[in-house]
Length: 401
Ligand SMILES: Cc1ncc(COP(=O)(O)O)c(C=O)c1O
Image (cartoon, rainbow, N blue to C red; front, side, top):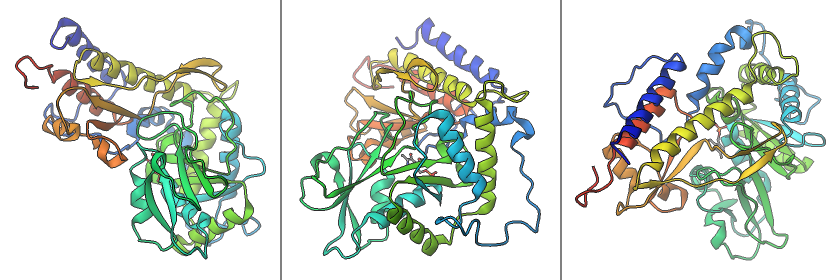
């Protein structure tokens, strides 16, 4: 229970872990902890250890042209990036790359929009419905309806969708916010198009159980390596015509994608693949082992704190065999889908009162008794979050502390 010796032991263990990563405390003990965004700064420790391995030098005479490879239908895709993305997928075995067209985007957020454009019937009498099963990634409704497109329109929870005719379904697996492994929901009898958002289908988050080979698969550099600031995402697309329309969208919206970002991303992805070689380069540390260990450690610590509480609960995830690691593991999602079991109607508001910002379940088409909490923040923020959670006592007089 909270406030016992066991709890104190947990906090001191947490504090010890912060010291172990070499991070100095810079947040005051009453600072506001923002875990609303999934800002993946957790892996800064890994990349510091890699020293100069990822350093890229770009001279002033380079990268002048809009074009990267006029022989590729995705003419703004840097050949090194295509090569390193495909190499990493082959190393990990999480997605098929042979016979797929690769489209690079300014983050996978831009590719979500490109996919909506590419899959919408151009001559439809009304906007095509866009759905995803609740709880769904909160950006899907925002991105879909932001420009009030005449081509597509957000239609909400895929579980409740029963309209005849064409639709587009986002399938996110593992899912943001709740970490579940998902398949398409709508039984559309041929009228539906699927976009598989596989942002978290990497070994640090979940066992790799098969080599995905869907029609459109979206990945993001942000959640794979933690370099969200580079704004690189990629789509693997089976049909040439769909790829062509996505590329058209990219042309019109941003005339391609930053070459500097692509070159840096290629270098970093190469360093990851090298780290997984049977004989890795000197001073290399297996990226997926390192990042998976961190996720396991954080989830263990969070479960320990939540286990002492009568107020909160977390989803459980089944074990599965990971083809990449050769071990049975469970999912360790990038977000905790935290539920309040007491009479608190709005958990987001309640946690805000304890100086923890988390995204309300309402934003994901779900109940405000849930919040989504980032598990990929800096170590110091994560530890403070655990301390705050631990300090929230079970009711003794009907009120929560
Ligand atoms: C499921 C999912 N898809 C796509 C994205 C967008 O990633 P980015 O635009 O950083 O590539 C995110 C980011 O959080 C995500 O969680």
